[in-house]
Image (cartoon, rainbow, N blue to C red; front, side, top):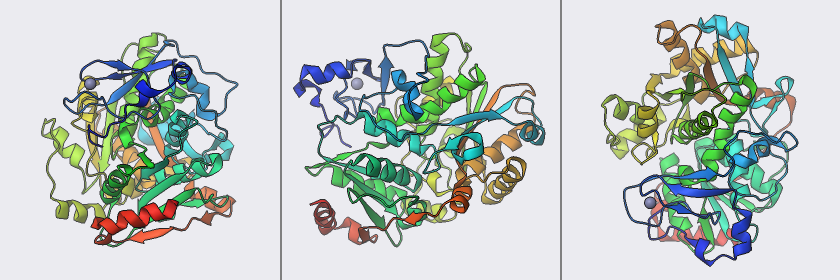
Length: 446
Ligand SMILES: [Zn+2]
């Protein structure tokens, strides 16, 4: 989204509405200005280097509301106030078997997905479910524009279900490879429209098309990593883990595509450290990508803030060889102020890689040990945890948190009959470039 089109509705809103958002403010990490939130703002209106907005909550103590549902237990540290029902949450546990497999003593898992015996019942079984509810909760009640979400798969599933349940008009743009994720226990409400990108297209094409549509009147962007609600929703994984363990972890393992999950974990950990009761040090972020498409890894290892250049053609070829498609963002939040480069630097973190074979092996090991399946992206993170532990990169008794970003997908398919959602429109790599594509998209929602 360009600065010109950044939304600054706050000045035009009735003061009563602003009061309802007053448990937090937004702060720009570049110029340090603070803003009241209008529920939609994605960027600082002042023109300067690219920078992520962050939330600043009035409540400084971590006090989950145990009477609230799902992630809304952490609502004092979530933006927005819209009441929604049906939200889930992460589940945190420790497994002795998993610890002996890894060769460490204090590894914990924050599990996001479907595993009823553990109390994990995220219906679209990844941590993207958490961000969808947080984003919807931040949208002002009276807002009538159509929400646009670009996704590689799991975010699309999360928004499709949450918007369907809450009757929020939504347009989802997804590369065809991601359609398999769009299967639900119930049918999807017609307020959710799905556009599938066919042919030689990927996640970045979906983002590009979503950006173009969001400039049309009547549509607004979910904002990807720029939306503070997305990050704070994902950050509830860290809140859930620390609520269970009682301490901020020493190391945090997660695979990243856009980097939103890693940034979210960092921001949540920072709030917990500022509270003072859960440890004084931020966790070292141990983030990973799936070979051969590893732009963040390559940039970090070259000690540079700028993202390395991968030609569009090479990028697309590499992406086709990656097992974990949700990790294939060609424009991640790496260089931006407050992005992955900054959080790795501040936490003395590091980047790691796993190839498809290592990820597959890790996936099998996890399933054999824990009795639940995990998604390829999480298998990448787990593979890097096993490798780092094996080569002595972690003290044996360190508190380690592994984010299982998606799990129990096969288990859910065994337990329930799922209905596949159908796209309302298909566009190939040539069609998406034409003006006519936008007209066809607009027709879908009118
Ligand atoms: Zn600013």
